[in-house]
Image (cartoon, rainbow, N blue to C red; front, side, top):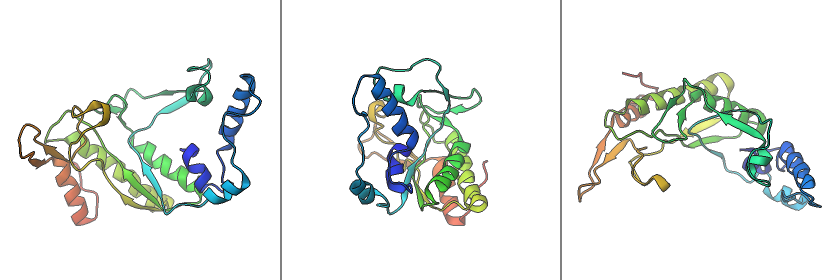
Length: 221
């Protein structure tokens, strides 16, 4: 996150210091005279810094990390520069996507980190969603939304995080990159076998409808 956000939102307007140091050291060990990481001039630091209307955050899942005792990945590579292993917890609930686990606390932790690191910018959660195997009674998606929205509400009320909006992914089942139509993120089922492509609301659509109408997080039932 800091790779992209730090030059815009940080007080020094540059890449994170740990990123600068690690890649410089790795570049030197590779026999390079200069770092593989491009350097910002003072002009470009001033030009880029603060150029935001809001902090747009896509959040789906999290990982724990630990320092890698052995080099990981090709040399050079992002994995080698990063120097850590990522892992999940066995109790985490897994979605239909290989990479997707429900980790609501990760969203709360990330929002608190953004507040502390970047002087509490206005945050819009631009994507948050859950994949399943295509069912109208999508209880796992309802639970996912419920638990993540509770984290958002908690950091607003108890930590003063400046979260202004929340948007789910996605309104309808659609084409999911290399997975095509095999993974479903939508709150509305799309009948792909019909010429009319009818949209049918899932349980999660009614959950979000109730949330919007009552302006409070509905219970899970």
